[in-house]
Image 1 (tube, rainbow, N blue to C red):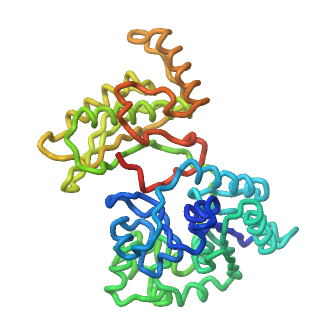
Image 2 (image 1 turned 180 degrees about the horizontal axis):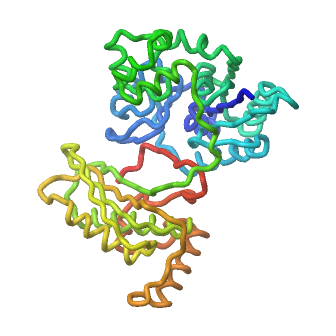
Amino acid sequence: MNKTILHLDLDTFFVSVERLQDSKLEHRPILVGGVSDRGVVAACSYETRGFGVHSGMPMKMAKELCPEAIIIKGNAGTYSKHSDIVTDIIKEQVPVFEKSSIDEFYADLTGMDRFYGCHQFSTELRHKIIKETGLPISFGLSVNKVVSKVATNEAKPNNELKIDIGHEKPFLAPLSIKKIPMVGDKTYQTLRNLGLRQIKTIQEMPMDMMQRVLGVNGGVIWKRANGIDNTPVIPFSERKSISTERTFERDTIDVIKLRGILIAMTENLAYQLRRGKKLTACIAVKIRYSDFNTYSKQLKIPYTSADHILIPKILDLFNTLYNKRLLIRLIGIRFSHLVQGNYQIDLFDDTEEILNLYNALDKIRERYGDKSVIRASGMGAKTIGRMHNPFNGQPPIVLAHRKQ
């Protein structure tokens, strides 16, 4: 049986949510992301793209290209709320779906044509989302995830496109090689240096030639250019690690500030572990200096999710890694080697009071928010906290304005 894969993408999602809240922003150039010069554009309206602006661009450059743009810091909680509404609508209508990002979904509609036209179903689902949320959304429909994603991008803004079975290669052929998922700026430049411009040229090449140029990735790109993709729709993906990092508005050597932020980060991630009933056995600290050189150090530890165990170890890693003569631009921590389990009391070092204290603190955080109870040493840290359980199967919210 031929598969039928639907790809849905909320158009300029962050911008659309902002316009939903303020109609005065309609048809005006908007940039959502970091408001400082070091910030990055998380999303931009179509009105800015004619100036050469795109997401992932430094905000300073975007402002130079489009000085009249309205810059909005954005709110992760608001975007998450609207994403959840769309997710709930899809969940009610679709048997198997994958949420690949906060604004992007795949659904496996294979076999539905026996009872109901897949294209008609997809169109009705899209109209239902638009009607109930007020958000524009586009979709692509084809035999696999890659072709459907490309079709969605071609359908935008706020439209739909179906690629019939057997028409995958003709559909892809005239498009730019940059339209292939997985082709970033560096790969694009490599292919352009070979004289490749359209996907059609890759389709006409032997696969081993692409592999000689780009290695294993060359073979993957060749298959995608030919509309070949067997990637399944995965409804849930178990997280293998959890991390957080902060970029400073100004490079710093303020050790007290750095230690306070590390403590706040560790405390919050430890709570997230307990919230998701997880334990970590490997911790890491990352430092990026003002010259952009980045260093990290990790340490294997006994499985735990306790603040009072993790915080000293994180600070020890930082002290080992830190070069006191250099200004720091970014710090981050990561917990990996995660397994399912609850925090077990250490018979030699812990007491029942400590265990009860964690339970009480976590209940307060669950009810009133991650930052409702924090250590005094971490009070100087800003934007440390999450809007949702990172282990609930949802993809992380990516915002570009997380600064200190």
